[in-house]
Amino acid sequence: MGVHSEGPWGARVGEKGVNTGYPKVDLGLAQKMYEACGGKLLLLGIAPEVEGAYEAIDYFLSKNVHVAMYHTNANYEQANRAIDKGVTVATHLCNVMTGLHHRDVGVMGASILRDEVWCELICDGLHVSLPMIKIILRLKDNSKIMMISDSGSYAGAPVGLYKSSWMKESADSDKKGGPVSDRDTIRVTEEGFVLSNTGRLSGSSKPVIFGMKNLVEKLHVPLEDVIRLSSYNPCKKYGFAEKKGSLAAGKDADFVVISDDFDALYTYSEGRLVFDHEKDTELFNQNFVDEFML
Image (cartoon, rainbow, N blue to C red; front, side):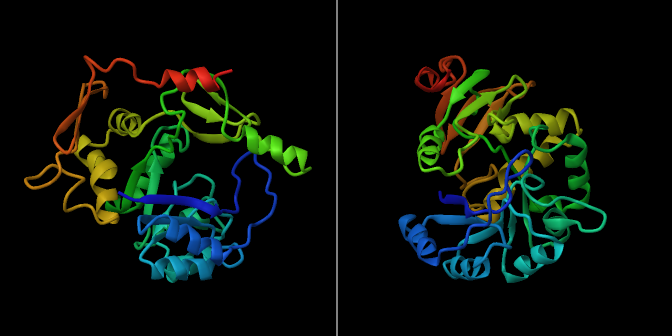
């Protein structure tokens, strides 16, 4: 349906990370990225305070690409300037961005207060605490909140220590005397954290449906409202609501049948059964475990 490019021009490394400097925007690279996606680039994340950010924002908006604030140290004033420029998405609200402070409410505050901004929100209870999620749901127009997972290749992975795709990059940097990645090993915890070897949060092993369960059972949000956050709102933002995001005559029949415990029982894609819990019992790629688990 489309490509989300989270970066590469981010500035904030998050908790327990070391800031090695801001990257400068390369408009030549921006053009190559857009062309490589063959018209499928839907969303581009950028830190608005990096050098050349506004030029990149103008370029991508001219190509009808949505632009998000992501991995950013911007203050409230800088965030508002970016929104005035045309930024309309906050990448994983709260995480790896300047948060709420009583003297400067940062990117998070600007994203909540500005109606133009649609806020991604990870509801696994690990990236954002449940009380903070509750605050956001009270303050932000819920029609502008899009539930996401921040899950990648470690989604559903067994608890343990893994070598990662950053391994070669880290070794190459070390040989050149450059910075060594702290993601040469990845630990998946029992709670679902995906952590670097310095303890830096590097994703979640929990899917969106886990976040849905949190909202319904722990924050007592009606399931009908949660479904809109997880399904309809993203489709509306990115132009797919006429065919996807809700169940109605004439729309694609994309839906999941779940148990009372929020376990997926059956999954349908465009009306076709693609997952059956009675038959599909191997839920994680054993080849991945064999290759990467330490």
